[in-house]
Length: 126
Image (tube, rainbow, N blue to C red):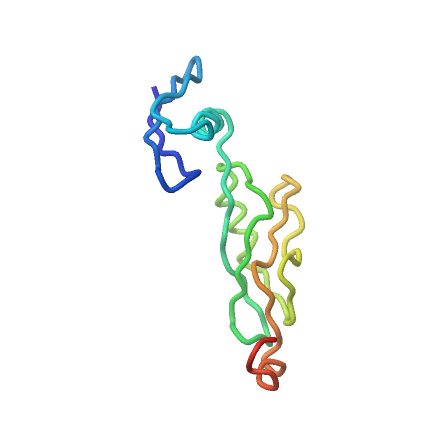
């Protein structure tokens, strides 16, 4: 029996998942059943991080995976970001790393960021 805390909603149900039958107990909604089963069969995570950006208002740009990737690839995925360096401007959703570890899932920008000179001329976003 595996004990898992469901992370799909704020309730955080404590799930008991039978490793043979994949029966799930302790969930308060249907989503908990699906989460418990997938967590044992193929755990996935969405990653959020930052990368260097030059010539921008800030020195770091937030990025995230466009979809969840297999949990065992998290460390390799994070290493891909170590040497990423962008130049401003960047638009939200812009692809930062095309393919994370052969998954076909990209890292994308989580926000737009203008150049520092543009921000100085236009201090209030429109």
